Image 1 (tube, rainbow, N blue to C red):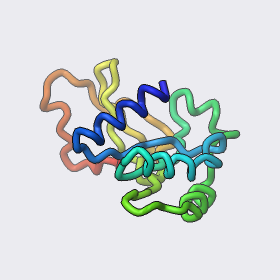
Image 2 (cartoon, helix red, strand yellow):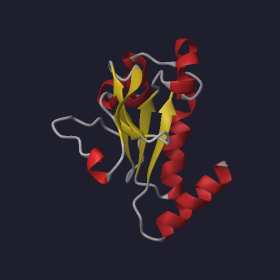
Image 3 (tube, rainbow, N blue to C red):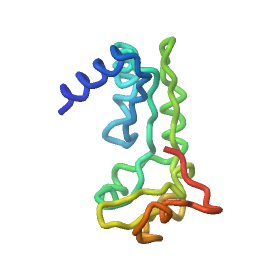
Image 4 (cartoon, rainbow, N blue to C red):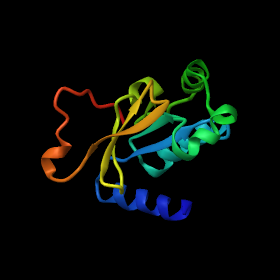
Length: 140
């Protein structure tokens, strides 16, 4: 729940950890981006990363109505008033391309096609299977 997440952030900050809040930026959330930055400052979090919505999994059905263009996302972030001590960044779909995800099905999955698709690329049987030789991993 939201209350438990806030309690966890407060506890982590009190323990001296630097906290980075991540949230998905989409049509239903872009008008609350400033509130998220202000909340981060109030809680003592060091930053907020706004993740551009990826049209993957359950998000694929929402993409047409919820996904912002790159320009809309950049404009939203540029308009934010950023309090001292809080860093804000936008993780674009382009930066998410190549991002590796280990899923419960025992496969490593990668975002492809500017993070508009995700596909299994390797079964995981031993720790060495996690090695990404020669592959650029995306940005979280």
